[in-house]
Image (cartoon, rainbow, N blue to C red; front, side, top):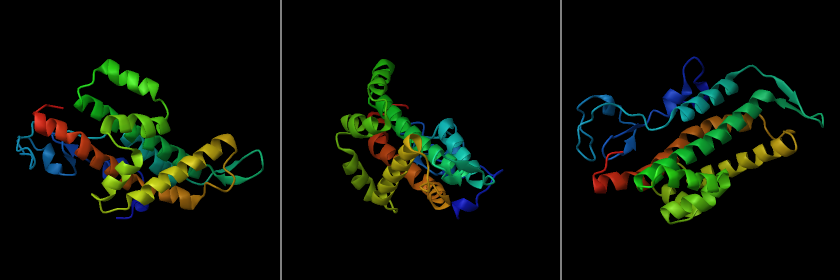
Amino acid sequence: MDVTDVKPPQKLGLVLADFSACQFCYIVDKDQERSRVGYKCPVCKYPSPAGRSHFNISTYSLINLTQEAFHSKSGLYEDREGSRTDAHNISVLLFFCALREVVLNHFVSKLCVAQGKSLEEHDKLLKNNKSYDRKRKKLLPSLVGCKWNELVGKVNNLVEFDCLELNDFLKNVSDKRNLFVHVGPGNLIDRALAEECIRHISPLLYFYVTLHNEYVHPYYFSQGQKP
């Protein structure tokens, strides 16, 4: 399936983010049978009381907004230097960058809960690490015990897509967003970049699902906790 061909009214969020979680061991996958009452989790063998979506509503909303912006009619944006670009391409990049932060925050929150941190501790950690880069470079390593690039390398050995390329792309779009905020888009945000944002949504989600299964799921599976 070519994700760029999925157009409204079909929701791309429902296509790409349809991950389900076991309510007992909290393994996350795309096993749609988990929504069936009584279905036994292949990992922990507990029967499912009901379906449980893994990602939050913000994730679905941002994916759908990215999709809508991508498929909207062109609308030219002219910056103060006179450079023109399609405003919808800018929106795609901005929504994608927001999605990148939302899924990181989601993983951090799930990990804090699994580690038994109180709501006050969780809120303090987020307050002291507000920016995306600080969460990625400081907060996350303090929770998992290894640096970001080590995490990327670890996930890269577990998945079928290139996490190193994904990591490079995330840095690239971050740089382009920062240039847009401080300078203007110029010719940096074009249709090709917008299309790459759409194509990188799925690997981004799988990256964080893999991190979840490596770092969150074991707490519940080994200790018998309920998420």
